[in-house]
Length: 375
Ligand SMILES: *Cc1c(COP(=O)(O)O)cnc(C)c1O
Image (cartoon, rainbow, N blue to C red; front, side):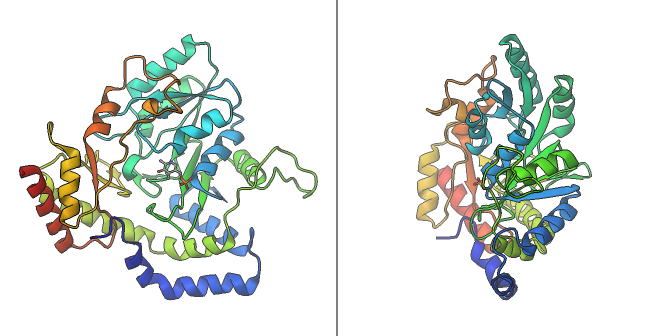
């Protein structure tokens, strides 16, 4: 079986440097918020062009901390896509706020600005305080911030970009991580920039928010460690993970370029068989996932089974949109319906994707997919 995401290839390349970086932390003995953490945060800021980076325990906490820093509270409306990983939405009811599920653009799978407008009108009619919009860079493609930003601003809302999949992607000369009021990311091992455990970060240009976040991730600490100034939480990135991430970040831009080559080869091999992903002019995806759409009428489970038999793993992101999941279906969604979300959930299929995927393996994947669809 081919790997779906080959973390071993990258590790083989970096193993000596990672061992040395871990060794340095062990020698230094500062396991929590040690120098490796501050160093990595500076590198992460430099990478995306945001003024501040605040690392934390995972990408879900990054989202939760972002909403806490924005003082989202019970009864506030927060606008999120339904076609995303649960973490994007789960932090909203965690704070007692209400998630409004927005439909997607069927081409990019990202938040549809027109649907956002309809959801905002609904929330306003519902008498809800309008607090924040969380666009997601789904599968690595930056969300359409130029369209979303004026809509959010008109309603006085903050923007939190969930770049767990798209951190480092490009949007018309800007870098994902440096857009919105705050951007959050995840260093879960399988993300484009992953560590060897859980990790996350928030990036921002806003100094006040950055100060709040540094306090909130560490129990609300103030200048005096035992005089906490906020109700915070324990959500810190381990020094060992920060040291590992510094090594991985040093080759991340090169890996993003390698991912473009892999994606281009998929287009050559698959464009006449399935709907390959759309990348709008001026944007670069980090290709967290390579998601194709099967032709109408194709039996997706049968296609997956045939690919599995041919040694090709696949995955479905996401088979059940959030607005249809048990814990979420009572929350409001676009009053005009969630057509694009529902259609995507029924027809998408993610193929193996990582920077080290070779042309020969892509030939094999493409042949297997063609065979499965022809059968
Ligand atoms: C992975 C992911 C998260 C959560 O990250 P964790 O580090 O696993 O908590 C949030 N949003 C999106 C879109 C993700 O893909």
